[in-house]
Amino acid sequence: MTKPLVAGNWKMHGNIEQASSLASQLAANWNDLQAVEMVVFPPFVHLSTVKEALANSAVALGAQNISQHEGGAYTGEISGAMLVEQGCQYVLVGHSERRELFGENNVTVAEKFKAAQKVGLVPILCVGESLQERRQGQTLAVVSSQISAVIDCVGLRNVSRAVIAYEPVWAIGTGEVASPQQAQQVHSAIRTQLGNIGADTRLLYGGSVKSSSAVELFAQPDINGGLVGGASLEAHEFLNIVKLAE
Ligand code: PGA
Image 1: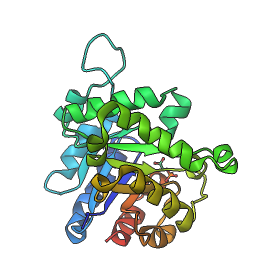
Image 2: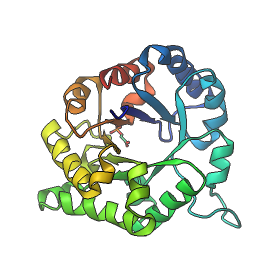
Image 3: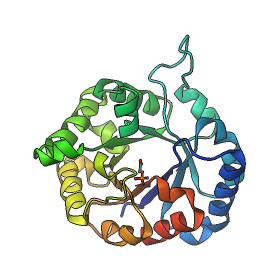
């Protein structure tokens, strides 16, 4: 069976002291939660502090973004090799905030996915529809085209080795969660798109996950964990969500 994965996306929140304290609390509790894989995504400048706090624990480290370029004159960018050097194992790719606010399109996202795997990072590919797209009945088409763009670039086998997070844009940071049925419908379509090779691919749900909504979501057959934003900034709540993925 696939080991569930619960990921905490800290976004651009907190300072070094808070990052260190949050990571230390997770490190102190991981031992009881070994049936679930835990990973946190602090801001770049907090990676080394968090890495130190997570030492001697199995909580993994990830980055929120990666350059599609290997190196060179790209002011402000961070390469995959630099992330590996910082101790990262995972990287978020195609988060809706990157797509919407920073103009990343399916092609950029696919290039970033490729760059991540090239250095041995596991990309968590984020996909999801806007509220308007859902209302127009385009949810499955949008999600499938976001995944196809990456398959076209790296191949189905490489996509199935990664993690995919379904995050409806209208549910991110809004307090509005997709119903377990809505989420399962999309997860099941993603599973079908991946075919046999994707039978064990971990598919996470993201969008206002809290411990109160996690139980039913994680009970769905094609949901293998969660990508948690706001609720991952509070150790107790995040650990509760991790417990529910067991
Ligand atoms: P949220 O964020 O849990 O605060 O909605 C999820 C995400 O952006 O990954």
